[in-house]
Image (tube, rainbow, N blue to C red; front, top):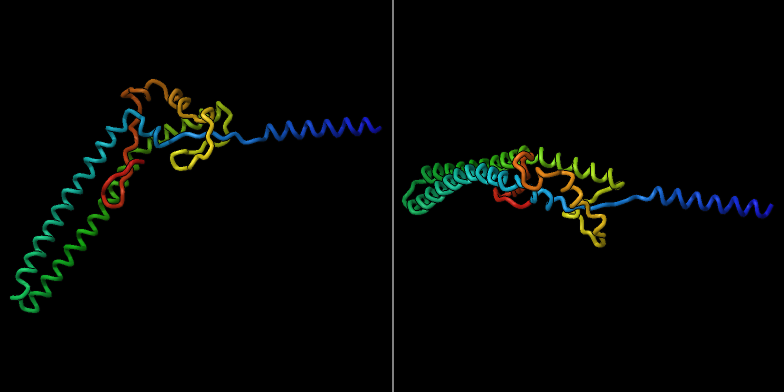
Length: 194
């Protein structure tokens, strides 16, 4: 009887250990930013965003120069102006400054919308490839190492090479792959890397 209980206990331990090993989570990682910037279309899309943003920047610069010119004119003539003329000029300067701020906000929103429009197809394609590789290799989770500090990250769990291979020859340099992600527009109208 004692041997039967021992055998049952050992069998239960073996089954629990096997079940635990099977249920363990497998984590992989990839530097998504590097993957995006490695796409052959990245420079093309970056050029499109820069050109789109430049049109807004030129208008904004012109508006700012107008404000500076009118402000300098006001400063130089302020001593000889009557109070009603001063008040009207100050009101016009404040109105111009508000239009500049509104235009700047609109430009930032438009550039961000254009960024999202141009990057969506590529980002969707890259995420699909990462998902497919993760399934093939048995990974439950894949972390983005460009946004997560990896204190320990075994090279075997880096999915970059496998994802690039999954994307195929069009990724390596073909013109048939979808458009790549440009730099994400920053708040001041400048751009920064994704």
